Amino acid sequence: MRTTSPCRALQPDLIAAASGEAAAAAAGRVAAHVEECASCRDAYARYREVETAVGALRSAAAPVPDANPAYTACVVTSVKGSSINTVQTPWPVSPKRHGMDWNP
Image (cartoon, rainbow, N blue to C red):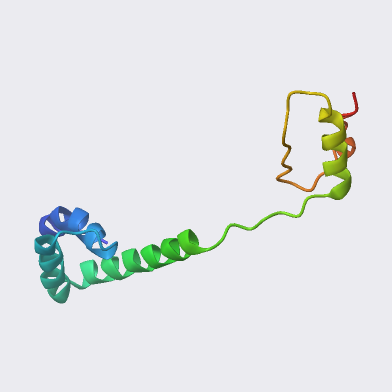
């Protein structure tokens, strides 16, 4: 796809308009341009699709991994008496499975 000079100059406003961040004047220029330019209209539609997908990801709750009880117990046991007050295990993996011995 080959873009013309006016189209290239409009790209920052096109992206800003698709994400809802364009100033009113810029959004108006984009709206007028995409009525006449099929290439920019297609680009705008793609930018909107990306913005919609990113917005859905931003609003989705992050998955919480299940902690392996044996691993959690091993880690908690290994830090007793140390200066570590809390332990969180973001992955359900046993340290012995990976050749680590965490028992003091």
